[in-house]
Amino acid sequence: MKPIETKKDYQAYVDQKSPNSPIIKNCFNAFWVGGLICSIGQIIFNYCKYRGMDVQMSNTIVSIILIGLSAFLTGLNLFNRIGKFAGAGSLVPITGFANSIVSPAMEYKSEGYVMGVGGKMFTVAGPVLVFGISASIVVGILYLIFNTQSITLV
Image (cartoon, rainbow, N blue to C red):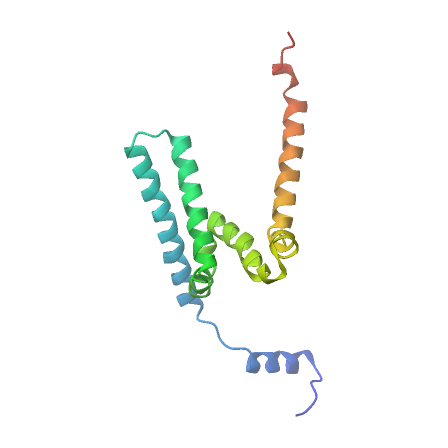
């Protein structure tokens, strides 16, 4: 094998070794699986509304069911198969977030419940939680500062 001397030679080498990905097929699979997940959520929402629940309660129940279903499928190692097939389509935010919490917990359960599951559960989702909580605190403080005229002291 001859040494790679130029950028053009390197790019030719990478193109030769890299497999071609079926972009259209991947996009189609992501689209219909993501749409299916959202449709399941909409069906649950409509059923809750049909049963007489208000919008806020219906949204809460949809979130709980989708998170629970995603965690359950991750525990059975089915969510990872769906993810390999659908790519980003299966990572509709709430199901992907549940998967990112449960996956490390399942992986490290052999190290024990405290140091394994408890210590490693948030390795993937931890930065997301920290950023989300920090951003909400900053937004809350800014909201409080700029809306002080609407606060009346008794």
